[in-house]
Amino acid sequence: MPGERRPDGRVTVAVITRDRPVALLRTLDELAALPERPPVIVVDNGTDSVPPRHPARPRVIRPGRNTGALGRNLAARHATTPYVAFCDDDSWWTPGALRHAADLLDAHPRLGLLAARTLVGPEAAEDPMNALLAGSPLPAEADLPGRPVLGFLACACVVRREAFLAAGGFHPLLFFGGEETLLAYDLTAAGWGVVYEPSLTSRHLPERSGREGRNPLMRRNEVLTLWLRRPLPSAARASARLAAAAVTGDESARRALGGVLLRLPAALARRRRLPDRVERAARLADTGRREKDHRPA
Image (cartoon, rainbow, N blue to C red; front, side):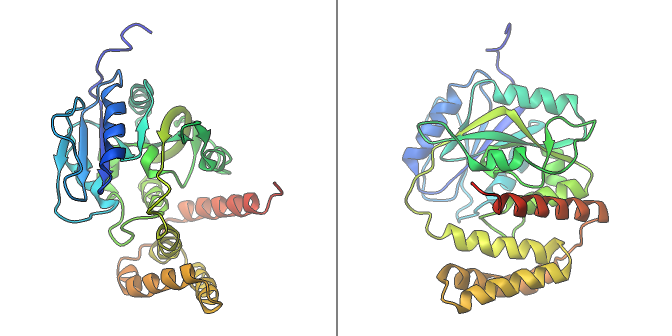
């Protein structure tokens, strides 16, 4: 297309990293090669992982501690563009995706977040999340593109900066692991659209090591999200299921339960029920996910 290789200043790419310089260098190389030539902000949660004088010319923020997913909030606050695309240090965007995302956000004023199709590994396999998002049971909305969803992959989404910051960004209580659902709830509750748009593509090349602790964090944050936003009986039942699994010797459940109990007073203090329309949508999404989980392979 004519003009396709012109720089596009509408989207900042925000990358969070922690002590993975090799992966980060690959991501920065990919971002530097994009035709959009986006501004890049790197939040370095570790010990000086960013290579000096890289062609991507990243702006580096070093908070001096591990901020987890909250590093994305920090990057968004420092961005000066209307839209922000998130990456981890092992993910990046394909050529043209950021321009297309900005065009969609320009054309749909109520659109707050675009979740992209994610291709994983050297073989560019479909991430299982793609099918889950594409099969969302939420009805289409006339003023939004794509498929409305209440979940996404944080390393493969583009947000309207105004909407993201007004919603509070990623919640500090969750820190990292499964933090996306709560943000999707809060954006939707504020009237913003959250959609899956498979015409946008991101790449993800995860490392196999160093991820043993992620499952307990995911389980912990799933329950905390219920306590923060969903009806109390739902949160109590999920906590009881987690406790029952912990009692049977499930080490992941035991660690997750410990994290829930430690953070529960803060979750109750920050609890805010979803509006009825969003709670109905969340229940519909829950039902669709359970049906998919029990569908024969």
